[in-house]
Image (cartoon, rainbow, N blue to C red; front, side, top):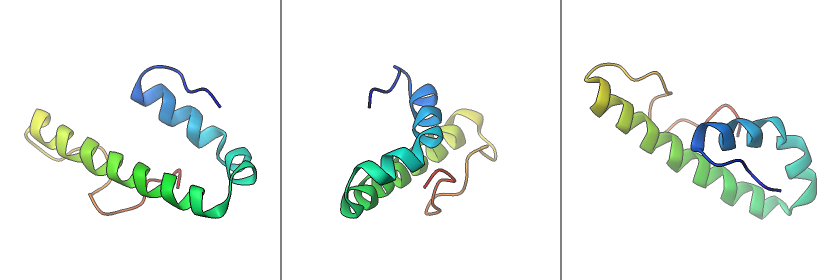
Length: 68
């Protein structure tokens, strides 16, 4: 699978192809990918909080992204 450049486009495509990915790789790899997506969601949340100075749009840190 090839993801487009840019985090927003890549994550959106990943979410759209999630079922296909889950069928193509072992469960342990799916779990590892989920953990990495969670870490990215946490980073995104913190970046938005720092840039906006207010409540970020992303989910609170520590919660699974909806694509997981």
